[in-house]
Image 1 (cartoon, rainbow, N blue to C red):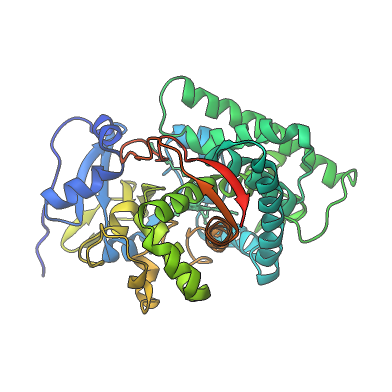
Image 2 (image 1 turned 180 degrees about the horizontal axis):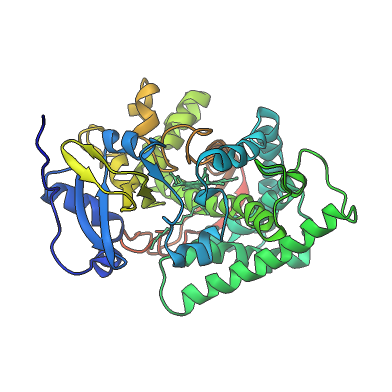
Length: 419
Ligand code: HEM
Ligand code: MYR
């Protein structure tokens, strides 16, 4: 019989404040100092396990070992996630709800998004030409809000764009913030759910006609695994689960623009490398820059792994950022090098995990990964091949503490014109 060992443990009453102070590096710093991919700590007043790396990701996505109910902290549910959405479900209920999300991500569905998004880039660039200087992050959030609503079948008038963009953005800008910024997010959650809840009622009463394949329609008519329509509030949470993250792609768009600026040799390679190089470039942007720091779950039932005990209900965080920079998985992880993706497809399922790992249907991996990748490709094409612009002096540094991280100046560009 193998012996049971004590997991490396961070001593002290609570380390939530340290986590907020070290941000994306909280777990990687301790994995390094403990020389262990798993350690025990205390977060939010309770025992917690943090882990990272490929084997830890395989464990984390084992549905027999981990569950999601009760895992997301309250401040995250009050802003980013909402209550009772797909992120919080387990077992049959999760599988059934996730299938609905995946049904929206068919090849035609993604293609429809790409075309709408291209249209919106085209119009946005036309409007930037007369403006002199624009803040890319702010502009792209609006552009993506239009794409998201159009794709999902959510009516959005020109007058509403700024308000709805601000509300949806507050949901992902605020979960880790304290004070007023956090409250803006909570207000944004109330406002967006009220807005979408009204539309769901109208669809159900036949007062708002939507095309069948659109997310607003699909979610309004969806029946849960027990054959019941979703409560209006839950249906609203799920429509927001489509709109909000599409707007959040603006953060990756900012990092894409930053990569082209920081690594100018990429421009030439992209111009001659076709779709294959474009794909590798986008994967490297997603690996290299910080976004979602970690995913959270709870231990489903007692088990042992590597001779360590995992006790039922223990809060467990999987280090997404640190796994994407793990020196055991990546050569020179802190070097930006798209070529590393030339031949590595199977290896990626649990190691390139900026949007979660494992399977789409049988786990919580992000269903929006393809839309995200395609939106980043459209952006790269516009920035690299279709427009010219100058980059004025500004502070383009980004923090590894503030979550989510966004380049400080939010990427200003000026003197924009078509090529
Ligand atoms: C789940 C990241 C874009 C919809 C997730 C997870 C992460 C993530 C880390 C959780 C994985 C886990 O819990 O194990 C991101 C990032 C994005 C993005 C960084 C870039 C902007 C999108 C898009 C959509 C989307 C565009 C929809 C159009 C969702 C949903 C879930 C999810 C519904 C919950 C899935 C589940 O619980 O089964 N995402 N995502 N995300 N994402 Fe994304
Ligand atoms: C989405 O909207 O689902 C996509 C991306 C959101 C990223 C938000 C990252 C911040 C998470 C911070 C968690 C802090 C926990 C206290």
